[in-house]
Length: 396
Image (cartoon, rainbow, N blue to C red; front, side, top):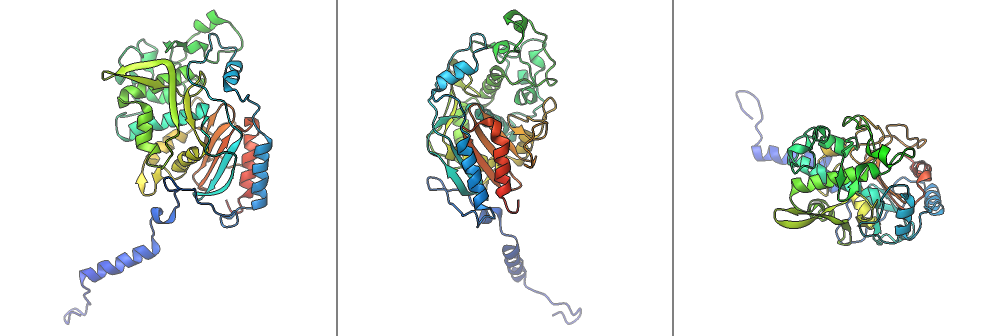
């Protein structure tokens, strides 16, 4: 104590020690509290009761999923050719694998609370691939390799892919929310031949009026493949390598997944022959991956891009990816939302999800730390299934 002022002095190291003890007691870090499945080990399970879930209701949801298997053929070559038979010149240009049995996982607070089917089987995932492609764009944006989503892609890719008054106006934002109306032929595929209107014929489709970029949503794999090619030009290395090194290895995924393009989707990058991968299995190819690795990817998003103390992907990018787009509120940057006219009953509209042909889904709910992965479920009952999952949450 200072005899003149009456104040008590505490040595600085003691102050630091007291403060540090207080912080450790009342403010544990996220990495200390949150569970992440370790690399190469079994995913830890918790009982429904431990996680505040009604086991009977959850079992009913799993039973419902198994009873509502997608009717798509086991031979996916037939399914693809038949499913898109009205497209002129449609053919398989990338690898295809027969599909497996229905499978799925429900992850709550990082822990496995329910699963069914063969979780290790590598299957095609079709347009779920687009959400991985979007993530590769996010990694470039995080690193300022793409300065702004409103930048014109022609300023990054100047090899005539974006020549012309219409195509030169296209931005990254337009490509990612599928409102670009990019026009042309890419790796032998015509943009107008992908999911054409049911009315009209080839000449009418080919001579259609182009819509101003950003004004009209149209799901189109040719334009998605243009995005993949454009990102390849930015990264200057194969996109599967980017995804492996920047995401899949850091989150402990297996080495069994593959990302394929088409037989003729090869280009030269810095003197090396590189395959430009596809954004789905519309013509074959796309991402082939098991259910466990899909769940890790979903958990990364549920945790706002963080993984066991490391920030793999920025939360700012995730907000962009799941934000409803102007031409289609149900669609963001290649993730689907419930912000438009999609009705899943009592399911909260803050969740978002990746979706692919044949009933492949990754559903993410950041607020409830919930991830659901589905393989080969009938898509028409997806909302009903998710309603049952949420009904099992005692305190969502």
